[in-house]
Length: 487
Image (cartoon, rainbow, N blue to C red; front, side, top):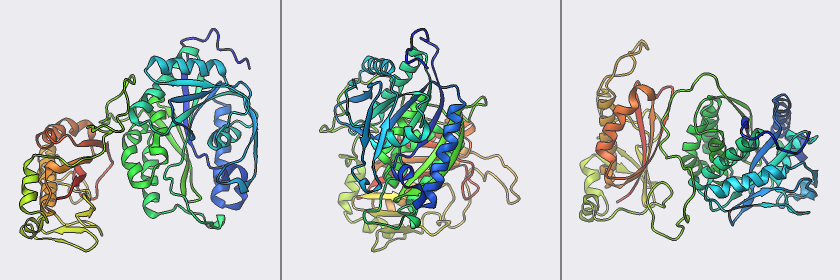
């Protein structure tokens, strides 16, 4: 295969996308763990798909190739070296020799610069290639049938910058006429065991991480890549996502920022406590449900990250609101005791909050929990305290038949329940800074839901993520989960 891209301009496309893990255990010691062995076999299934795809380029983003100043693209046509992972050197050496595409690397650099990013190619003998890239290329294309290109993961870049990097890569694919396989080399949850374990007994490091991993994989299996991109912040905060799930941001942006894919989860296993999964995504001929993408698209990068400045918006660190009525109420009742007593609320020594004024939980969880200066509310819908009546009507009857319902009434009741819980803890709706929304029918309900939501939260400016789910535990159409500042 020729390395030239001449004559292919304008006809490029992303043939397929994959998410793969980059830990060296799968490459160097699969026999030590049933899970590692399974992942190794699953890499083989991906390799066969790639060989049959007609692609001519492997385009990788590895969370283990960390850059600090801008974004780097590998452009050495034949990098050859022996790599030893700095953490897992006892597993052995990884000699490699790859086929990179320097012309594409240059095109990617130019496209990134055109969109306002700082980018450069690297091409000199002995430049260290990271473990994730080595593992992915050796297992996906061991005979170097395809040329490859690898972009770095800037440790300081957040969502906007990473999205622009993905769009720049897509620009380069189209301009050079490449038929590219996009590969996000990343773990899901990324909490590792910090002391030696028996590989045969490897497991996901916590039940919470495992639950979040499975939620994300369920959504990916439905082809909903953009929804996962929108959930990346929440996933990272809950399950220590690998590099804030930047590889997912990059992949979703590169592939078009939508949900119209056929998704397939090939495997999911633990690797030293982390969540390792292999997922395939192919553009679908049948459109997916048009779900809401709350965080705006970004076409170019035009400024500093504002690390030291006081900022607002999705990338800002939360800071307590000032000069509003909720602060005045908090000053009058700094402990929140009066509000809690009025609402029949109790707070345990662990910070768990329960109140008789809100509908009872349907499982073993409190209405909210206070952690430091923050209140984390459990998901809650429109059911009424004491009666469990659903304003606007249930979405299905006792026999399971679908019923008509009023989403505006359900939304209003849901937010009022949230108000009740917050005020029972001495806080208020004004102090909410992050909202997760779950709707069972995005196409039917989003517009009406959004109108009611704006009545309560437009002035608050909380960040928000909205996803469609198949069902909720009770016959309701909407559920919200919020995080707020405590009193």
